[in-house]
Length: 437
Image (cartoon, rainbow, N blue to C red; front, side, top):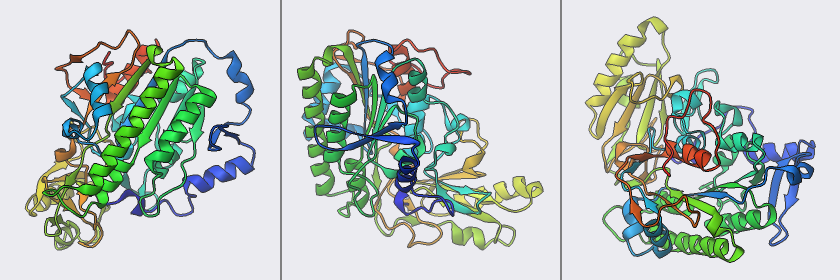
């Protein structure tokens, strides 16, 4: 399901509206970058203290090319990304983590922990208290400290430049500086990469944060809406790759011309890849589950494109029986790859993900509650979208030049890598990921 179509809790403000209210109430201060007039915000009263912050020339930049497939870096469309990869440390065995969606994997990047510790297992969940499906786009949804506020407490400044409204929402005020993305493309809920990269360069020029976390959303959004399918040229997505790569080239050029390159690491990765399906490859579980007299009217489904999260809403005493029936029925539906008991140890999704996690096969998509609910051909969330690009460039001596690692890198490795680079100790309980430098 397209994330922008998932409702928020009743009575909850959209992140932008909430942010505007906070500015008017004086809880945040708007700072305007001189170069282009783009608006950034910081916690009110914080700016005068920045001069006293810890002094280090080290800089870290995390660039997420949302939805990028690893083979697309070798397609000839991304020479600047390829140069970054070949010139630094490449992890070809890199993967997104379940559920392979945008919000959980961005939070895994910045926390270094799995969803059972962060509280963020997917883009969309069934909120038992609310009694409805909603997007995890509220700051309170993320219950584990991120590298952003942990560096801030060390006296180092941070920035977020996140193109998607719900990412802006869930990370809240955790960064020292935040770009409030605009203009937002209707339906897609994201700001084009041209504006996102302009904001990134302006934030660096104006505030020079020690860590900047950037989401570039065009490749993902055009992959979702690309109606040409998996066997054609996918023209819109290719154009997005070309343009995003050009912008990354401009970003690297700016780091070098400003003298920051030799003190910096640049972590480049995706949050998931992308898989395409045709209209006859749709899985809808609502009907088969409703046909079972024991389950009818006593379950809820949160559709995440390539994954359905199924929640038992009947008596707790019947949960185990319900899980067995849901798994059996779902497994018999064409297009379903596997139906897992959420408590399976390897998933580590936590109770927010419901009771049964169902993945579809490659080339299929979920559409619940009915076959018209998810019309977009490009989806992710299922194992077919696990593989991601992951490499570390930059001119800092910590970055090995031209090296390929055989280790399995994951989205949870970003926070440990950045933390180790700045000499930050692991959080209480440690990371679930590992430093990759």
